Image (cartoon, one colour):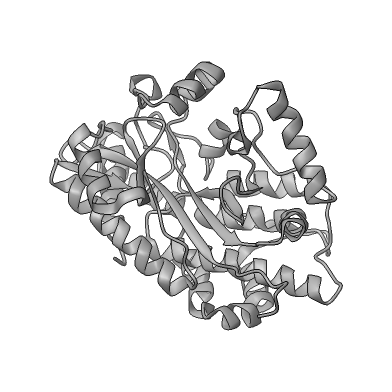
Length: 377
């Protein structure tokens, strides 16, 4: 690897909801559960904004195989420790029938500040996501790839969609999570920057006002990490099945390598207007994989059964070099098996066809999510 090449290391973060193993209602993590998790997993686990959530993060992983092993262990350990307390974790972006007004936030200084600063917007944040960090050590290259990678954010969102329900209602959206998250300031697609210096000037302007203390309070769909030399993709819903999460992470890593390779050859991915990318972002949020995205080159909506094979072909040499070609090809399994949002809708419809009331059908959805948490471990 040339000294100018990024390491393209991986770090994965997932947020889980905690449900009572019997009732399937959301439940708060007791203090002794969090203590047991920290004793077993150290700084790879932490509480989240709401007390019914828990977050895990892998170490710095050189390969997708290493990332899978780390994340699989984290899921197993969290499941084991939660089950000992009569609790089940679920990797999903919204609980199908929980009411956000019933939830309590974690008594931690950062979260107290969030609750105070963002008021009712923060209190609605009963959502979970998956973040994928990719090691890009050069600061200006990080910004260059930030500008180009935004094109692919809708693709990743569509693959990960897992939030079709909100407060007991089928929303008609595949990723309702974003409608909640987008109410926060400093969210959505990242702006375009000419350099890392321009990015720092913009961020530092807000920091100097005292509105935010650091760049961790910037929550774009893709951002230069404030803590690590990485680009952090934050667009994805958290997905119940480990195999699908790993495929999305492998695709993210491979796309980053493809864009870097173009840069080395004095080329780049075409820069499309943010207005156009936002249209695809909305299509992914609304339709998931079911209706396709706009191919701006041909000016048509292209269905995913055509779009994904083309995308896999484009990144295949880079996935092969990274040792994750099989995992990248696994995104076709998501198309075949359905996203979590599609599977949840199917479980709900089948329960209703058997005569279940909405409340009982929604519990069947949660029960399926509990089972899927262990899928592939």
